[in-house]
Length: 394
Image (cartoon, rainbow, N blue to C red; front, side, top):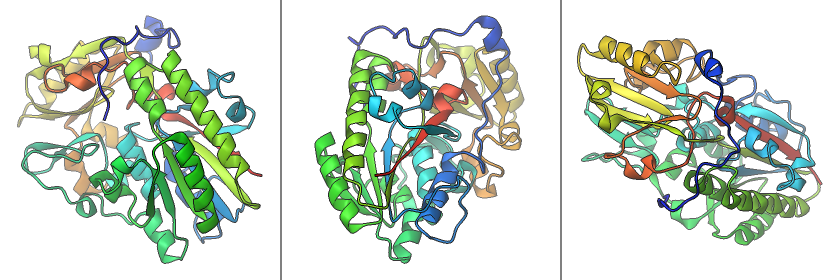
């Protein structure tokens, strides 16, 4: 969990505000599903290990693979600071798109299943539980008065289950805090969880795991954490980026012959400046029964018959600051993938409000912690969608 830090610095100058004419003309940066997205990475990694599956990304064969997943390390953010990450910057990289929304639980489900959000159903941090009139927070795995079974909420077979069935025995290295959580069970079924806290402990765990398994994932979340609290580009954020660079170099040095290290992220980030407070806007609350999603990708669940009025009001009030569309428009435009399973449609808001520029839709009373954050993500902008994919071999 993220602790608020009201004493944090002002928004860094790394992300200047876009000119008004650019914002008014902005168009959604729709993920490249089926071509160059996080959904295409798991199958390509399996193919590189010799598993008969599609290799959309054309990865070369490897005896062992280590995937270093850096939470919040967007491709544009990494490119802005080559001096802080000299090891990573010395290697060529391609760019993938995260998926919509560009949030951690959605991307983890995408990486865990090899499917876009429209197939695995994790379409937001907070989603409606169809027929219940309640929101489910899949990051905390909580829904008031309801017990959500991870196997039911996300029923798709994971790539780890598939690997385990083939005798690959995948290993996941991450802090003990997440071991056994609902989100972990939903997206990482089939892997062995190795708890490791510090950066050095995770480096050492990766070295040992690569001697036992041909598929190892190492997770590091402090870049995202510090970006939320202090803003991306802040001194504290840069310090965590330097840690990532050191970790990647150390893991690469420990790769057995014939192995490959891949470095990627679940999303990028922007620094918030223009905050629209839903809890203090009666005009925006009118007709909205539940406010889901997060500050950069809001799901609006409306009262019966109110969807058209909500759509009109939000479009007018957020013109030049957010894309406001109906559920049907978002699905038809491929935001969640080429198709959305019928049973997941009720999880998506009747109306979606997706800010761009530095705009964030907060709820200061219902979500005080989230409303205090500087770094945010979830939208369909290049800064949030673009994630790096680096391949490093001994």
